[in-house]
Length: 235
Length: 154
Image (cartoon, rainbow over all chains, first blue to last red):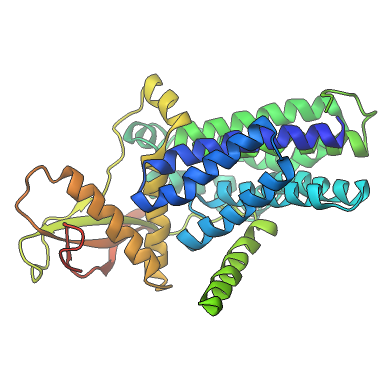
């Protein structure tokens, strides 16, 4: 995948994720429309591909206003990754030469990879994650289970330790998938399934949309570092 | 005017920094979990004795519910934002999280009151945590009384 193709695919997926969250906020408190109607309009322009560089810069200004409005991210990690992707896209457009453009795209690719590895590591150093106690606490008293049925279904389940081990090992092993394009595609499919599972259990729908937007850059990085540069998308 | 704009811009850039250098530590430690409870009051002096959890979760979500919330999950995401605000109130960061909770509860109560005669409300934050194998509840914050009607009082 070429850098241009990865950038364009990322723009399209980011625009879809931003439109999705804008629609949610339009039905929030009345003042939120001031921030999210422009976000929806700019995202539509980015989706179509009109003045992509200027639209990315305008989206960044809009992001600063939204951060000021909520005094931080509204939806935790999903907002953080969205802003990170946006900043990296701005840098790819502002880069003075192709080499700097690739550095910005590589940084974008690195962060979703790190998001899996560092999450796995931060769980692996806590014994409660290996025993299943941490997940038991998540289902027992955390705010996240999306319904009473989900909370009850997994409370005290013998599956919890197995689920914990699976998540930790997958997250820690994720960077190894960069060694092979085929393995990476399988790993990204599993990662997307992991985010969908988190949506089904905890209602984290925005994480699915935004994390997938980071995948084209990972595919590009793998091609750039290891692969033969198979053209997937002609940009 | 210019000074406050520059200050706000600098603050926004500061808020953006965690996005540029994220820590990516999701769910590493499952700490105490806040819940917001609300009580309707007849007068601003009532302490409140009938507390209800704000936005109790659905009993179950069917296929249609999951399909809908995959694309549009505004209410649940706002509920998670309220939890973030509750954590901010507990840390005593600023008035912002308190205002966010007040305004969103006020909107909920105005919409759902259905002719309730109670013109005031308070909310409180309860921390749930594991203690010797059991889940314990501690009330860590109780708000002042607020009017349900926006602009009719504090």
